[in-house]
Length: 112
Length: 114
Image (cartoon, rainbow over all chains, first blue to last red; front, side):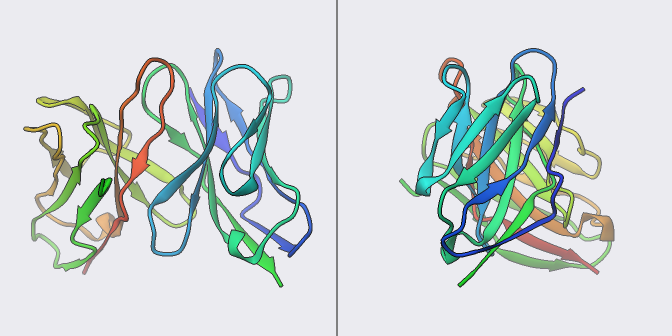
């Protein structure tokens, strides 16, 4: 079975502070991991993915994510958050077929 | 490229009515997907297609049907709408070259069944 957990429904940070959105997965083998962002009334937008190689993956808008196999985690990070980063963030995992399994999402609010 | 387009953006249905949600992509992607998004539940896969003429069920296919007569189009059909189908529906597509895959999402259709 495959599953993705985003343990925090909401994350609130002040602008300029570091932002972390947590994700853990439970998949056999070596999964492909993804982060997507959804702005209000919009579809999901791809941020970054981990397939293989370096554990630190850099993506769009200054985001990065660190793959940790021993902790089965793929946390999303941004060193200095912007108000415009306020959105809904989804972690997703794809084992070895083409079907993504999504987490429940984390709402990020960055206050000015 | 317009990417993935969906129509309509909003729709209100009465119980028992039927409708088709349209999805079109202009990226020549082989793979297409339909998801529904319910609050606090993430996205659930309804149906997917690996190419024209080939479709298969996802996690939550009951109450829906799909067809894939062309590479570009992947309509989702609701035959007898029920309140449980109130949701936001997203269509997505991907090319899947080799072992990398990024899904591109449409803007969504917000459906309410009363």
